[in-house]
Length: 350
Image (cartoon, rainbow, N blue to C red):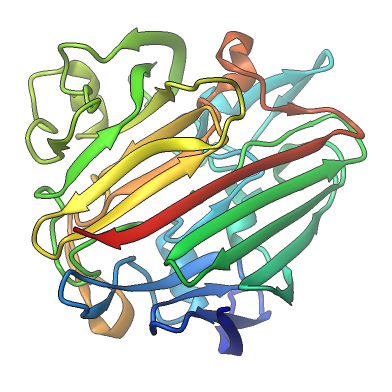
């Protein structure tokens, strides 16, 4: 069984005293998570030679997480990704959200759960983080009770169990936003890593990077990751969708055997270290983001210098902007119902 220890992390911009919870197994591998945004600060796992290294980008204090506004390691919600023009309609009422990313609302703007405090309870192999998001926070109706349980076991399996209930109809679409570099968080560009996605279709984005409701096949395009492909092979291909986003920042529709099945959706591997990551989820889609907006010279944990395309995010979620396109799958949570999704990351070597 993994052990859990707690220590002071730092003072958040809102003045809150934050803590780090370290979940460590018998092999010495561990994960640390903060009660500020249920933010993953460290994932330390072995390479093929048994050498432990931290494989997520991040910072040494909570203030830096909010300053960068890049959602490093955060649990993002209430609604992840972009809502076109920050507008949606629910039960006949129109809502206007804060615009914080071009012309769109990204990750719920100032209401984002990434920059909020949670209460923490130590559980077997991990920690359960709970927060009551008040009605109107981020522009969403209803009081929403959110619980994110994070566990890390003896097999280096990291699990996020998301639950939420509201006292009004509302919108919920959460994700985990860790920036992975399987070579180690100091290793630089990840363009030599290999990716496989169990996804035959993807969402089309418009010039503002918001999903426009159209779904297209990945076959014969730079977006075809149905077999392992080096992620550095085609991010700059002559493809308008790639040019809009400056590389990969697109949502893929998962090939599910049935809705809400907990299944393998993505595998990322690194030949330099022999590390691999397998991602499993109940969610219908996954956003692939390859660090196109990381600024060269960003200083991270322990003075590490991060760079453009220096990480890969595998964000399991609902299709972005789905609240405005019901055929993409509804992120509406009805009063009295429970939002419950699970995403797991299995770390290993080959």
